Length: 436
Ligand SMILES: Cc1ncc(COP(=O)(O)O)c(C=O)c1O
Image (cartoon, rainbow, N blue to C red):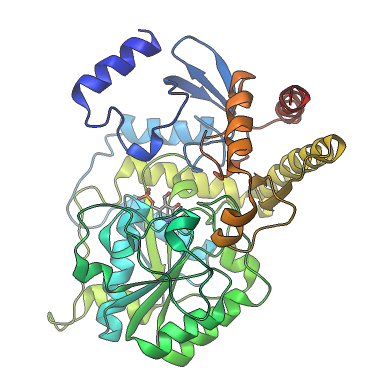
């Protein structure tokens, strides 16, 4: 089948023509196979992949050991039992708690959004409060409780607000106003605004990505994450670190191990199972144990037919073992390729005199067409050249290099990217920029 016929068939039956509508992008390509660092479209063209399906593929697509673990699960009849505990969830939870010291207890789910929803439910049960603080330019899943727009325009958000909160711009229609009133959006890297909201509202939890990785790569300023920790302690707010994107990609212990900050709860997804659906919620035993509180009125429900599915759990176990092998040696290999890409792009753009800045958190990288590293989404809106970014991405795709064709989406490097892949990427970028 050609790309065109597949698109036409999808458009007849799928509302919006694509499942998960944030995958909709132009050019509308149809990928049919992936291997290592490569994607292949329905016409057989190959692309060096930096999209990584929005970041899960830290080991690259179809990693042989992960695939083998999945095959073993299927061959040995490790079906979804759905009754009692299983050996796979026991092993996976032990690996998770070893990898991330703040995880005293975990629950295993299917997606990051489920983990985020449950973290909020837990925080509410623990504190007896209802409101939630989130960050501008952050994303914590598609559900109502965190449903502010991720990339609102400058016209929508208006002038910078500090100390204070931004008006809620919902990410979706259908979010009840009563829910919207409970969401408080403050700017990233802005402790004053967090304190302001903590002082004036009854906040159950603060949920934030430690590095904003849904608007590229916006790093926390020194002391920001520790400042959040201190404020949460002072105001009795549950600190939920959303490591769905940063977890396992930044380091085996998550970005929290890099920053040296211990959240109360953390959520993970994506790279934990290298492309298989798995979400994790974990943290302080005192809060997590609300899932098994002896008093039914204080007990928090966690349930899910597919939670801890043996196929996905097997993929996660294999992934974590690979990541932890030889003291995490794989991370230094991925770091080398990431530095190679960053430095190559930096010298190319410097040579051409095109104002640009590359920010990077381990294997996550973003090229901004602005002359400084952004501090927050507001800064990006004011200074980044969105049109040039979109053009750059489109023209790179024509050269066989795939970054998601929406401005400010992070590039993800994997263990499967070779020195040669990076060299080819840099040559492609040189051809693109050479035509400008
Ligand atoms: C930081 C962050 N949190 C939560 C989520 C939601 O995860 P999922 O798409 O698995 O529900 C995402 C997804 O992109 C994310 O980037």
